[in-house]
Amino acid sequence: GAGVSQSPSNKVTEKGKDVELRCDPISGHTALYWYRQSLGQGLEFLIYFQGNSAPDKSGLPSDRFSAERTGGSVSTLTIQRTQQEDSAVYLCASSRGTSVYQETQYFGPGTRLLVL
Amino acid sequence: GEDVEQSLFLSVREGDSSVINCTYTDSSSTYLYWYKQEPGAGLQLLTYIFSNMDMKQDQRLTVLLNKKDKHLSLRIADTQTGDSAIYFCAESGRDDKIIFGKGTRLHILP
Image (cartoon, rainbow over all chains, first blue to last red; front, side, top):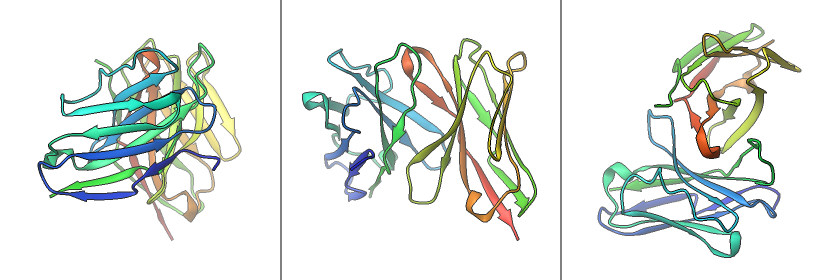
């Protein structure tokens, strides 16, 4: 596919359960971002991967959130012991990451998470 | 801290021009963006402007930047029903992070 893909598109889970969200960036893009969009809120930055560098985790809201990126491609965002306030749309974006200037970020369709 | 503000709703008649406004706080921003989000879809980059520019035009879209007032606007000429969406203003913050506003929902009246 030509764009960023995410799975699942929708996820309903019970409070306290763990969830894993997956992002497949555009092939060749070295930069990958996770954002969260809560109802009535703007987009919130979560974490940023750039090549083999240590990820920028400064946006993760708590230690229940973690993300990894295997082989510099696919990324998984894990939320442990989910809470109702975790309900949101989780968006993944990627960019070429080859320029010192800010680059266009291409977004996936998002995963809609509902914690009951 | 960095912040981006925009109004939440805008209603415009079909054929009229839509103007969506945004203010930001980070004077060191190098790029400012407009993204469009249609129902059930991801964000789509509409246009962006370098901070050393005042205006950028791309077909029906015109972006105006007032760096002194930290004010950004998006004008959509001849608004169509397909323009109905949420429009996000965003600025490039530090370390390649993009800071988004809450989005303006554009509603097209017949």
